[in-house]
Image (cartoon, rainbow, N blue to C red; front, side, top):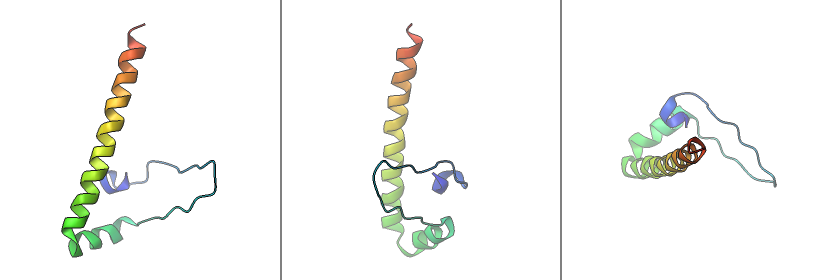
Length: 67
């Protein structure tokens, strides 16, 4: 989310052992300049994920407000 919001907005919790990689915002900015097409694909994928989450959350609100 920091790619969009400019600050950290979430924590990562896992039920099983995982490896989590961090990409600092300034490093991604440099990557975007070097590889604009790949960076665009990353941003589109991220946008699609957020859109799906928003659709699901809106459906939950609609369901809860029906009572």
